[in-house]
Length: 357
Image (cartoon, rainbow, N blue to C red; front, side, top):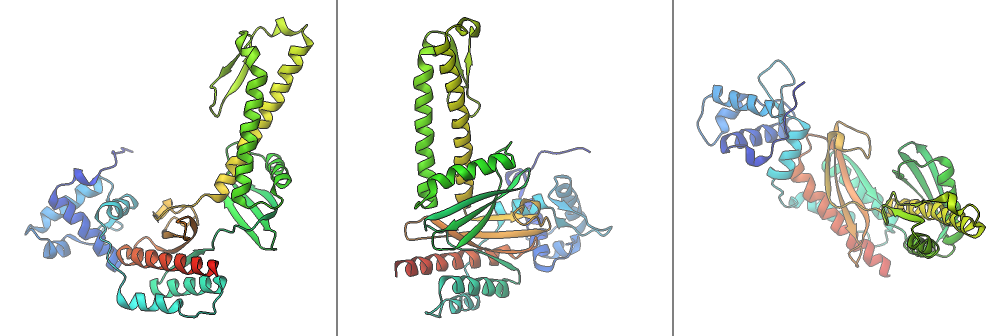
């Protein structure tokens, strides 16, 4: 199979760009393939149906359009939808009727945050006709216990038990090469530090531990490196290691051998703490505003769907949660994006206000 470099919008001339845009807009509107005769009636430039068909064939060659049936109609590919969303999508404002329905969700003063988020999810689902996603605010309560559970070679679950009795489960992708044993070791280490600390404070404590361990290793290894008996390879990098030279010359010097063994133990400990810091970073990671199309939508493993998701922030402009909509790839992105964005801003303000009270 011949592959072609992914095209960019500037590669297309005005006519090709307009044909591409109208095919995508027609497909998003109707869900049906768009044919050359339909396009010929709507193009700003008067051209024949044969000319339009040639342009559509060029766009299919570039991987932007596809012909699902024997018919002459075309639909956008995932690459085509990605280009449209990134370069041609016109984002409007929230329609007045949609805004009214969203605002009504926030009108009950006695709602607690959990009820509010449930109502937001239900409203988004009804308004957009898709499935809603609402991620609750990140908790800053102190942690009582942490558990890591391996779900496979590239997926793990962290269970966070907070001091107030609340429990959160989060799925993340662990650093490469981790085993169920190493995950248990990481949890044991973190639980020894977690008492009375929030997740953010715990991450800071691990960073301090890493810095301390690094300084201890450097101090112990310094004389060996200066004497030429040892050298750092990839110093400071993820694959850093201490290579001992002329090891035979050190065998009779018990003190040097003990020092080398101690450095090795410390270095192994440093690597474990770096992995643990990676776990915490992945646990706390927040995404910005994104549109995931088709197989890009790995969060729910629904290759035929799209996800429009927007974070919401607290008063300090920190991401504390997210709201989103999942639907078919032919979502009306121009309408859905401002709805999700508007809802996320409202949720952020209200959650922040209730947090102050």
